[in-house]
Amino acid sequence: MQIDHELMGKIAGVFATLGFLPYIIAIFKNTTVPSKTSWIIWLVVGTAVALSYKTSGANASVWVAVSYAICPAFVLGVALFKNREKEPWPKIDKICLAIGLILFVPWITFKIIESVHVLPAWARFLPLITLFGGLAVDANGAIPTIVKSWKRPEEEDLLAWTLWSLGGICNLFAVETWNWEIATYAVYMATPPIIIMPPLLAYRLRTR
Image 1 (cartoon, rainbow, N blue to C red):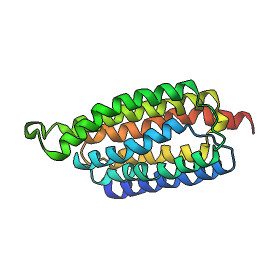
Image 2: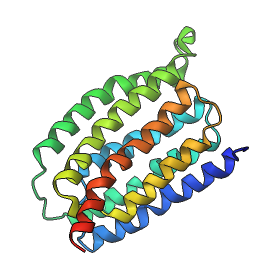
Image 3: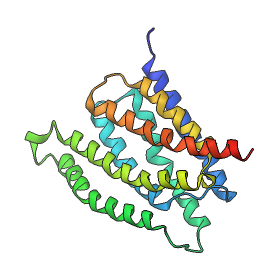
Image 4: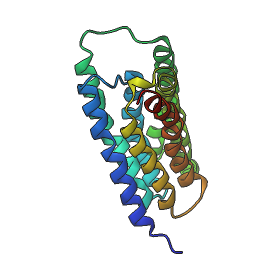
């Protein structure tokens, strides 16, 4: 059966974008308490990774990357607005933010080198370096939310993570060329939601 990669990519983008709506509503209702470290890192890295992903040759599967580059700004803004009391950050958030900043420096350096074309001999590899470097920083940002979901599942929104999981899965079918540059990002983006969903679902089933 022939897969319409472009259609699957757009469906994945719709799921990924829709997931932010119940998440933001849940923050306003105080039923979701997002990790600010995760969303700071996801905002910064998501924008740059989306650009790297596009230059690596992705087309149909780029929509999820675009959604994850733009929408985290709204989540972070709402989270900061709701947390004006300046509650102390969990220790794991501080550690992951520090590691993320450390990893960010060499990664953004390679991004600048890539953009100004000062190392033409590396032109073929720089998009890969920036893509994988961005994923490493992004994964570090996911750790606080993953840990919190398993420890305090009541603080995350099941509907939002279900939509993000569906977006990640659909995005796998949007991949037109399964090479390391493109497939790695698609597989990675599907992974955190799938890891986060089980404790959220189990908690909702226990408390029905």
